Length: 95
Image 1 (spheres, rainbow, N blue to C red):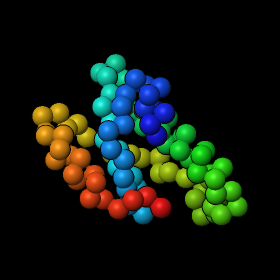
Image 2 (cartoon, one colour):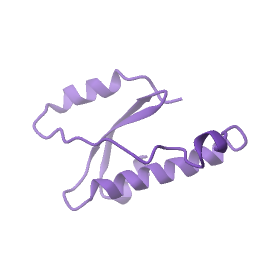
Image 3 (cartoon, rainbow, N blue to C red):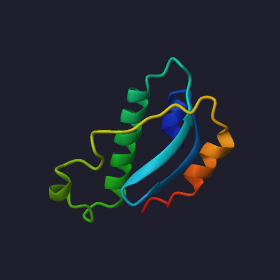
Image 4 (cartoon, one colour):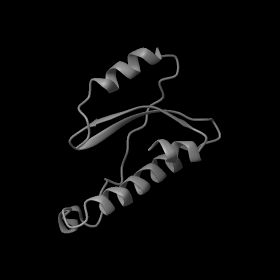
């Protein structure tokens, strides 16, 4: 995740998640389209997870996709970074 962010001149500030989704706090420049960043994060992570867990992932159940085609993004400009970080840290770690 960190390397993908660096490729977009962005910085991964926090990463955490739950059983079925992840939370990322990313500081990215205004020239970056969040949709392109998210698409790259999902694509790269899906490839890495498939490589690591080959044979253990059931593609039939996932209909050929690791991640849902949707995502949620929110701006937290103005919110204290410590509060946003605390929220993400309190989430469960991804499997």
